[in-house]
Length: 443
Image (cartoon, rainbow, N blue to C red; front, side):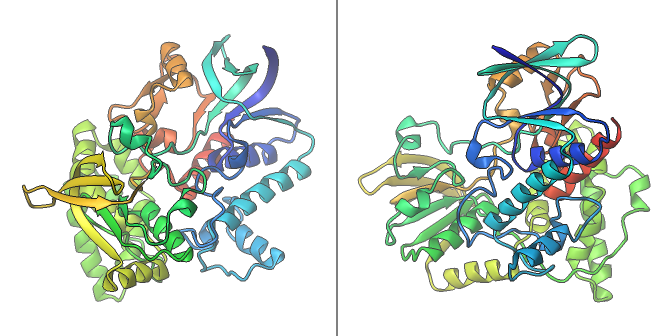
């Protein structure tokens, strides 16, 4: 093994790792050394969501909220204008263009702050352990690393498989990860497709299928059958600060939100403004809740929070509704019970919500749109097992992510999706950018 010594090692080169790299570069005047590990070169500086070469898939947040810099909110908008793209502050730009923006922003920072030494390693992390009183030792497939600071910024994992049947999972017509490769291009235009999940990932797949001229029937299935709610103009509206000073249970919070939405609507303020203000406080609320309250939120409130918090461009929801009205999309609120191979592709058994009777559906293709798998479900990853064995890491109580172990210090940083169990709101750029800002400022 070739030894590499660095001030900082960043594990993950997608959005989270890129934001950490940029912030480290511009906040150190004295030279530092940074090593960044990313096992998939295609996703370097883009991650899973922004590396797909599909122009019809757009961001779910307008451009003026997606700057890479927390202190330059219009940075992306200005970049779009400089590059000649026909998008403004309120537009939802294609994901692939946002991927280019992040990549160019990283390269620009590398040029501006050239006093620092940055090395990139297209390798998979295998192990992590303490090294002395303040540092860490890491091992990849090709190198040994020592670092004063380690940044776990691995981003989102692929969805969990819908079933354990290997005959289904290995079937060529089963797309277990819609973000991997160009699987949609192999689907015949007349094929029938089941999309499991009705959230943002499902919408991206429908838009892509429509763009390639798909004519076959599309079935969309999830436990409640909810689509994400559409964006709308949302003026600033402050209401939750006074409540944030006192303990509040998930059920009481839901009642408060409903009452505030009613009050706001009487003043002409949309519900989206109410939710936007609450979002600022959700990490604090989550951290104050005990385990039973967190479980209560996940079981009863989470589905409603997700579709109101993670919204869609209005044009996207209009497309879905139009396809439903034309009969090309059929939506089910149901529990998936079983999937088995059949002559046509797959035989799917499900139980509609509110029913005890099983229904059967025959489809040619299945796409898993259930969303990213929690890092807490991926504890068999070798580096996580190593971190747990060395008491640097531990799974959180709900297996949503990982937390720091007793032998970790403030030089081991969890950024983005890995810390969902402790922060809950930890997957969007806004939260990741804030986490990076706070962590770098404390160094």
